[in-house]
Length: 173
Image 1 (tube, rainbow, N blue to C red):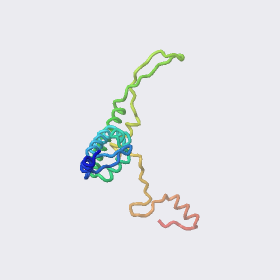
Image 2: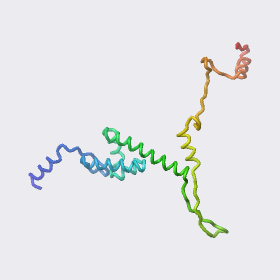
Image 3: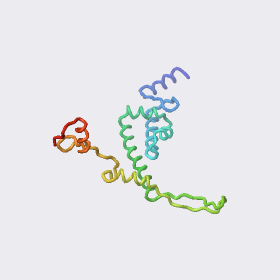
Image 4: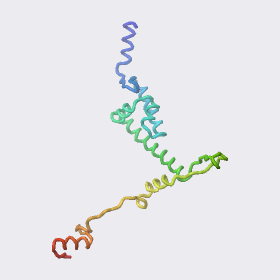
């Protein structure tokens, strides 16, 4: 390469921000934009950072760097995350309510005698969907209250009687 061609190539690269991508290769701004778009497109369908990074041919570390240092990418990622969550929710709903068809092999006395197609539903997914959509009705959390409305401790009388009897005191209600 002649000195003039080297200088020309160097001048073209001046001002370009290069960053390391997968396998240490450098990304130009155009390549970065393309990789980010591919990542986001894949992430919307898979909800998986590793799979999406591989599809975009960048490392997970690069994706986390973009999330930390690139505001527009972070916003786009947040939007893609919403789409990915919707995709997951729709799939859970389909499996819970519409079910999935599965082939079963039928055996009789150790020999295959046929096949049948059955539709299976996921009760567990339906439970999770109901808990997410109607938490007031289906939540499992319990409220444990140690004080009454007046702020005084609510202790069962039998427990108070035992405490006071062991201390040889009388309870003052």
